[in-house]
Image 1 (spheres, rainbow, N blue to C red):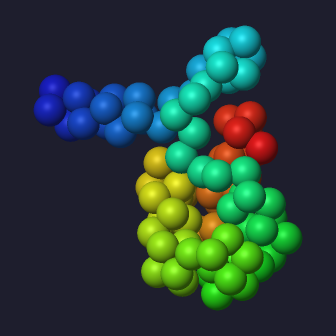
Image 2: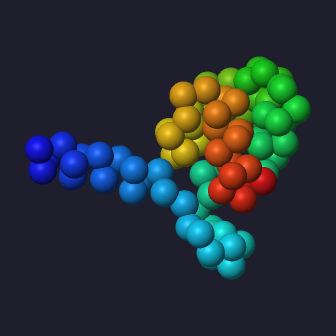
Image 3: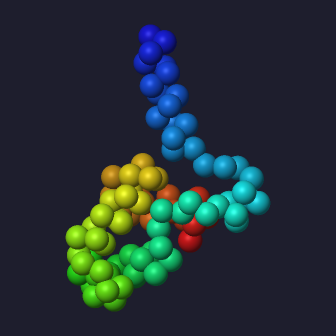
Length: 89
């Protein structure tokens, strides 16, 4: 039982965000590029983003999935909402 609670705590702790707004403003480990975020919020496809940024579609795919993993999202929409909630956008 203790192991299960420990695993739950670690999973939730990993997804936690700071409550102090001053700390958010200084956050430097943002996993997403502002240009990428702008294109994603505009509904651009991976191929369109790749052309705009001079990346391969695979690189875009990796960046998007890394961001999704960082915020604990299963969809792009969830990731976008979490990025906004964390104050990264």
